[in-house]
Amino acid sequence: MKNILKSILIILGLMTLANCTDNFVSLNVNPNGPRPDAADPKFQFLYSVSRSNLYANQWQVCDQMSVSHFCEYSANDGLSASDYSIDARYIQGIWDLTYIALANFNEIIRRYEDDPSHVNVVNMSKIWKCWLMLRLTDYLGDIPYSEAGNIEQTNHPSYDLQKDIYYSMFEEVANAQTKFNANADKLGSYDLIYGGDLDKWKKFANSLRLRMAMRIVKVDNAKAKTEAAAAIAAGVMTSRDDDALIRMGSTSVETSSQNPIYYHRGAAVIHMSTAYYRIVENLGGIDWPDASDQTENPNITSHILNAAIHPAKVDPRAPVHFEPSGVTATVTTDTLDKNWAGTDPGNVSSAVGAAMVTGQYVNDYAKIGEWFYKNPDRGVPVLEYSEVCFLQAIAIETGILTSGDAANLYEEGIRANMQKFGVSPAKITAYLDSEDANYYGTTVKYSHTAGTANTALDKIITQKWIAHFVEGSFEAWADHRLHHKPTLMPFANVSSSVFTRTDDDKTNNTPNAYIKRGYYPSSEQAVNAENYKAAVERMGSNGIQNNVWWDVD
Image (cartoon, rainbow, N blue to C red; front, side):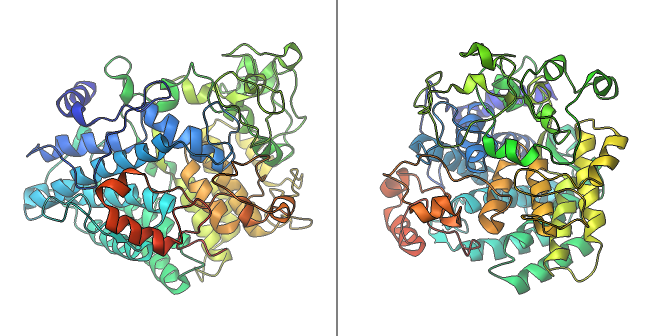
């Protein structure tokens, strides 16, 4: 596998983007830019999947420094968008990456759609490109889709309405998952997700369809009901074995094929936000880990046990998510050594290592845990069984599905995610039965709804937010824009040049206190001006405070 991937990266490496905080390169890639010519579809598929994932420095600038801050897992990392001022190179990075990958998938489809010997790679490409474009349209709103990345189409693609993109993707995913043929092309190790397992690809496609259906519940309820029911009837994920993970795997071949958090393991990135701390503190009523917990769960490291400052009770996943200060970076303030806490979002510094506007330093606060950065080939989550459980629970609670047991699905989602981090069965049972509330009033026990922020929907989306940590930040951000849950914190400071808010929005924590979308890259004004202007007019502006289609408030 490593040798295959190395060959692909060398052959097609000229298309690789190389953004990083020290050496930004912008290719200003047109959505219909160049692509490999007549590559073997298996090789082309493998390369395109690996490059459509946010890898290496692409992950750092497109996720860690922006979206992970928007959903408030992290806060105030140097050079991040913690004041809602998104560096233009971050936007250009995800745009370029997406359309290079789309061009490759469309080329596979165009060349081989009528060739029955390649039916599987063609339909995997159709499904994966929908996952890819869902991420971008949810980030920006209207984007080039139907005319983008097609060699026979215009070099100036129009921007499709987000509603039309969703409707097209519903149809594409639904059709593609029915066309796999076990007797046709076998991708094996060329498939970085499932190793060629067609049954799992079907479940992934239907689970993706469910994700899309639950995104449009407020703006297109009837369509959401139709698509959710159809997705579940066709067969969604049923266990953790169905999880969609990108398993590129490399210890020495290409650093850009390593798990991106491992790749950045030595950097001072992903520091805890106070919003995260408030959500997990006391939730579930489980004591901070001690030596006996380390015996039953090897993910409880000595650094966790030696934390000098920590909450008395905490969600049992949280100490694995974040480790105390001082583990991989020297603290600035001696009294904050081994500190397990976060900082209020919006107090960002302008450079790595600089003091925040409060005079604090992020290296004095908790940083991403060892579980995430110790393994170079740990699979990167794309869509997991736990999410599918929570999506179904939300669908039942909101009337999108007319049957099913929301409580059981909610608990199964928690159980699946906790197992991922090695939480013991006994602790899971105690957690599920707990009425201990977090800072906002949310508890775990499904039948316990007393107090504030403690409805069934509050519980489900809070648990979904925790389960998405930190590699599902795009989904967590989308959930918050859609449902305004879980409760987060308006940024302490925002850049007045890009974001305007009233004191009422900040004080009362209204939806208008939060970023609503990214913005279109400036390159589009140069290479696709007419269509860019039309899209901006429809969106109201190219600002970050305009709602995307499915976000109605």
